[in-house]
Each structure stands twice: as C-alpha cells, then as structure tokens.
Image 1 (tube, rainbow, N blue to C red):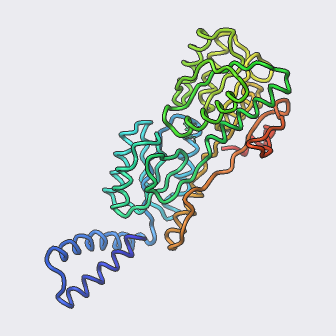
Image 2: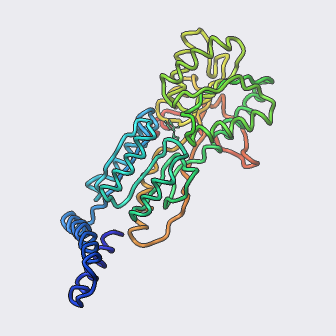
Image 3: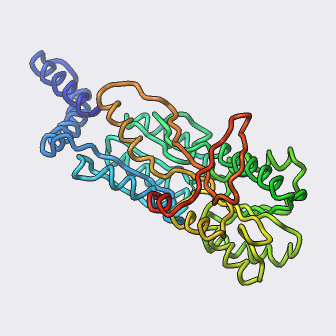
Length: 359
Ligand code: GZL
C-alpha cells in the first residue's frame, strides 16, 4: 500500500512534470524507473486487487512449536486471504536468514516478517529494509541490536523461566524436597528464547540456593536433547533430581535417554522433568505423568501480525510490542500455588480437552 500510494504520487508528479516540462533526465529516468517499478507494482496490484506481498524468514523446522508457528503464518497469509507469501525456512542458519531478508528487499515485498534465529547482527539489514521503505514485523524471538522494525509479536521468555523456577520452588516445598540439583538442556545459544528462559530460571535458582550442575545447548531439537541427556546420565549419574528442557522436543529426547539409562522421571519418578512450549505432544507427555510441568510459549502470532498489517494499511499507528498469552500446565498432583514478582499465577490442569485444543 505504501509503495502504491508512492507510485500514484510519482506518476502524478511525472505527469505534472511532463506537462510542466519539469525534471531533468536524471529525475525523469529515476522517476521513470521508480514510476515504472511502481507502475508495475500498481499494475500488479491492479491486476490482483489488494494483494499484499509478504516475505517471511522463518527460523527453521526444528520443533513442533516451529511447525505450528509456520502453519499459523501460512494459514493467515494465504492467497485466499489476499496475500502473496514468500516463505523461507532458514534451517537455523543465521547467514541464510539475512540472505532471505535481502531477497525480499530485491522482490520489493510490501512487508517482511522475521523470526530471528539469534538476537544480534540485525542492524545493517534492517537499515536496508528501512531504506527500501519495507516495514519489518518481528515475531517470537527478539532482536537486541536494532529497533529498526515496526512491531514485535511474541512471548516474554524471562517470565517463562521465572514461572518454571517459582513453580519448582513451590512444588519442591509441597513434596518436602529440600535440595535441588538441576541440569539444563538449553535452546539454541543466542536465541532470545534460550537467553530469557535460562536467565529467569537461574534467577530463582540462585535466590533459593539450588545447585546448577550443567547447561548445554540442545538446539531445541529432540536429537539435541537426547545426546546431551545421554552425556548428563554418564557425567552426573545419581547427582541430579531436576532436568530443565527449554522446549518439548528436547524433553522428548531427554526422556529417551533417561529411559535407556534406567532413570525414572516425571510425577512418579526420581527426576522432576520441566519443559517449555506446551505443544500438543508435550501436553500428552504431561498427561502421561512424564513431563512434570510444561510452560507454554504461544506460537500462533500470525493473527496478531495481520492486525498490525491491517492497521498499517489503514494508516493507523501500531504498538511496538505485542505480548502473547501464555499458560502453565500440569496434572493436579503438580498444581501448586506460586507467584511471579508477587503476582499470583494460575496453572491449567491438562485434560484430554485441553490437549485437543492445543496447537
Ligand atoms: C520460542 C521459540 C523456540 C521454541 C522452540 O519462542 O523461538 O524455538 O521454544 C523453537 O520450540 O525451536
């Protein structure tokens, strides 16, 4: 829309220019090139009505959460809904993600959506988007080294980590567990989800004198979770009673490793297993008493992104940050009262209906 309005202005200017004999060759040629590309755009836009072109640079396909995030965007930004979506799965490769964004600039899309694999290294390419007049909407993970984007839609990852820590404190007290020796299987190093969850959980751990035995990067994958847990089972045999997995797929891998090592976990086991995301398969493992508690990260950002785009198309202002609603899940046996910074938290009991309604 932005470029279409610019096109109309440029075409009018050129028409006036030609009528008035104004504008040198350079400005005509520049106008003609801008106008030509814009006229093509307006031609394109005329041909396809109000189609809005969007470039989406997605992290990858590493987890159930990611699959749900991708589906959410593809469902909302469909041709039937009036969008032309260029989707790039960047396969957890930061260089490929920057390349994808630059390809969207070349394509002269109307909007760019980015879920940043890591939180730094963005200012240069976001400046290029700004110079090209293409609004950028960031979803899910955050960008820490630039604010050259129009809006961000996602979760507060530190809050998720604080919730897991405060829940564990209350749950341990309810079970008479006085000593916590924990292992963390972290998400991809440098991802804001990893940074925030580690920061929040470790803050509660330090405040309560818990013993952090280790933290290694499981890359948010099931294979990563399994290989790290296999190593932990050897290095810390008999020394740990809590495992924190920063997403469900890592938890699935850790479960396999602990099964193979003969270590019991979950509501009826020796090890408390904490997970994040609360995807459908994760909640199924909560219901099976394997994951003790699961802290949701909502992947369904696309409807909120579409609201941002609609406001921009209408020339309205938009919020810079839009936070998603999250829930904390467990079975009744692990539902305890806890607060985050004095704010009482509600836990959701995992039932078949809750599982059916999940993403
Ligand atoms: C969090 C998201 C994380 C999920 C993982 O918002 O970026 O990446 O927790 C996913 O499942 O891989």
